[in-house]
Length: 252
Length: 126
Image (cartoon, rainbow over all chains, first blue to last red; front, top):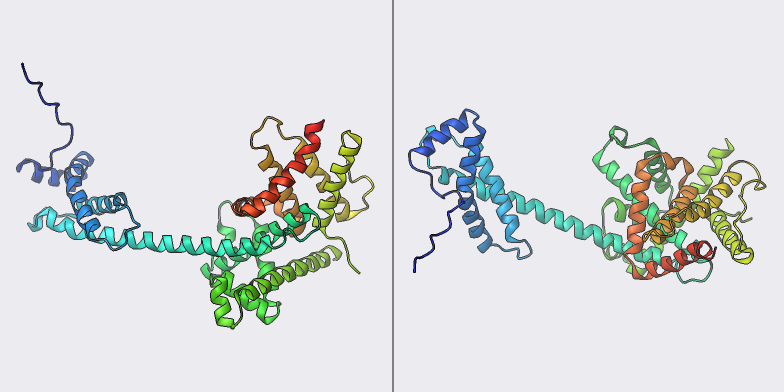
């Protein structure tokens, strides 16, 4: 019986013919996009090998192999764009350093982002639990839910106000931004300054410094539950002050 | 002396609207004609608007409950934080954040489900 012929290989071979590669580099350096693409495709398996080596030596087991491959590919593309064959170095030698650097930078950013997301999630959960205390205390369900919503809304606005303060960003330059929320943030910032010392400290620690309630409790020498009470009291005082401020505005 | 706040006005109007509809089984009359002057009247009109907007939702919309609660949230937050925020897209982003955060808590979500059922109940019985 005749053996079936093997399926034709569609993938680009790992190594270019010796004579073809210098021509491709020369063309790529002159801005030939096709030559550049061919070089990148050729060395993608090399980038995967580098990613696999770095993945095998990883210390953070939460990051997936695909992330390593992605950053390695970014490093490869940068290498192809910057490699100058006239220096007489091998491309792989040149690219290996850049790929390692790209993976290290990418993982660092990814880790920082993950930490930030986890911290924000934890702070938000604390605020939500604090706001949920308005439920179940008797009274009207709609009023309770309105209190929960307002507590969270004030929290988000305070957080934005703190972010704006830290970044020194001019919110008016945001293409989709309008004036009203920026004004509300400004009013809230001014009202925070007028809070009693403990309330002001809790609000600033939580929204400006992103400290969870337990860390604030440690620094103030009180319990986490007490911090939660002070936080709730601070938001309530801010609400009252905002009412008073708006009443004054309307009176004028 | 204690004064009734804007949110309490909205809540009171929602309850009065629902109570009236359940008792009479008829469409509510428009609020605001005898509510006084200035912002009090405006708030009462916006409160009545909550019920009107909820009634305007498509009865077949599977996301109707969430939209009804969103209408309530927007009205409450505008009444409390300032009706001028209605012009700012950032306000609606904040409302999204508030609603998502509330939905993420089983305790709050259960209360929201009860509130949504009450908001939609009169419209279903029509």
